[in-house]
Length: 334
Image 1 (cartoon, helix red, strand yellow):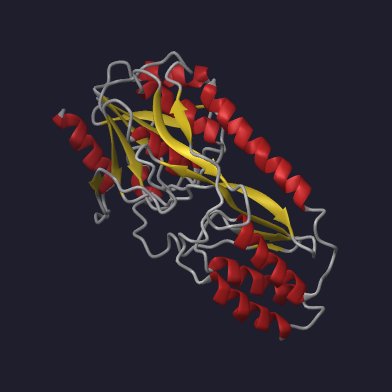
Image 2 (spheres, helix red, strand yellow):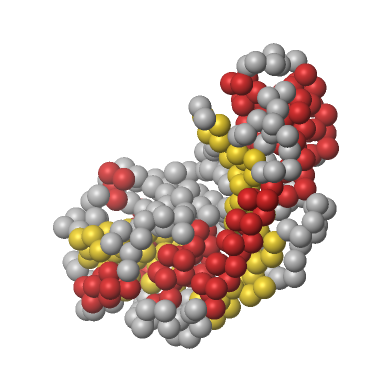
């Protein structure tokens, strides 16, 4: 339960901070006031200002001047300007929410190979069953298990896991496909990873912002996979499939599986999103979301920029999924 306690404490800390923050600024629709406030929120509370390589002080001067040119009553123009400023951070966890729109940065993945094709995947995902939110079947003449999990926001139970692993009891290996999984509930990531560990193990560290300085952080705390969560054990060869759109909680799951027993990562570099986001209210009442908790691997290296696979594969074929085929090949070599 220690892992879940850590996650609960982090979430509670962020919730309390966010609830307190909304009372700090008087209501205003003035563009300059809101751009100034948004800039300051990111400058003092976002945990990756230094890592993003953006001259945030220069950004302030440029965007405040742009705000001065906006008409007072054009909320859409103000939203677009604020979103443009936030997107300079190239962070999928940085979003602006207004009643009429939501900003979302795509530059962190749209210049990378897709490494996922649903039509090609369907050639393997035949006669599948669904346990909770886990799609599963066998491939390679029923010798290898295959699980596709599209979102860590979708739940599954320990009972669901037991059915899946029982279905694979005669398989020599297992493929877990989390490509294009944009993340969700980190607890689901720990639950899915647990069967692949012989014993509980440290898989990384976390720390949260403690002050307005770019380097004001708490001390690092351990993150552990509790191997006893499910009572299920799978120690046969396992391959996790990754691409650039494997993000946030999925990125953390991939990090966990690097330290599992008899597991490797195949495909493309994951998308990152190593921080845990919180929300903060602007003077105009809009909400900005951003990361304020940082996650690290066991060597205390930040995982915000993504995780490289053990075996890099870029999809080229039009009649087969090269990444799934590589996973099958690697399992058959064991």
